[in-house]
Image (cartoon, rainbow, N blue to C red; front, side, top):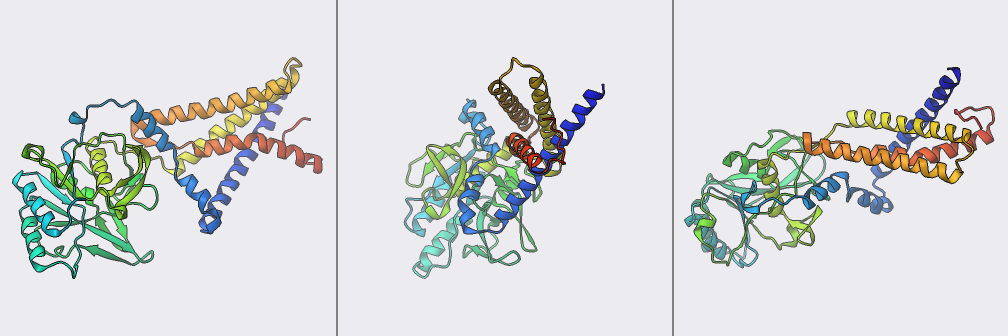
Length: 387
């Protein structure tokens, strides 16, 4: 019994050292990236450009065979105004849309005060806008620093026939949406929440971040110069934007129609579909992730230690066989963690990341070798090794 207790104690020491070094390295990495040094940008971008949620969504996307016509969000139609060359043309398009009697129109376009535009064009545009039901218009927030910002709005934003809302996305890869966005001391309603509240989609009233489900079907897209049947738009939600404006293109975490960049109006549609489908996924809080990861790293280190102990007593096992057994054990832990996290993700709409676990497992063998080297340099130290 004392031998078993001694083995348990030595394995526990080794496991705790592994967890401690993993935590220190993780903190150091975070501190280094927080310095914003330019030569770390490629590494930081590479880490940011892929997350475990991307794997979950891509797996789900490959197994999804839902019918586009019956999917949630299929009542949302995008109209592309890329071919419109003037405000007069857009005004004519808006009249066509108004004649089709949609449920709501959201304009993901900002019309500034342009000196090259005639008053007649502006008046024509205003008259067309007033005909649209439940009109939502865009406001772009441009931060100057952490506390101050400026707002970019259309020239008619102060009039009473439309509701203005914020179109901003997160910086970098667009994975999340925030129903209420904080800028300085102001809390502003997002573009998609404003639309959802008007059409009866249950949308959270919070500043928390939610993941965008890009696996959902993308619905109907019409061109401004296309001749469509009014039935396509009757009682539908119409999103109007430019699908080819490079200034309104954002990086997304999945490949859609061969592209990894999507127009802002397309992302707004996916957010609305995500809320309509109630796929409101959130990340498990860090204070839960870290203890669970530490427990799994502890168990894996203990198991690794016991395998080594037993293998030393078994003369038939070669060093190569032992190494393969340990590698398979660690891979098995990681695969199991990912599978469990994936099931929790789709079952409870909470994401449990395995990034801490993967880092810890990768360090187990490295730390084991490091401790042996330290013991050679300082023989009086004991780290649970019996060599």
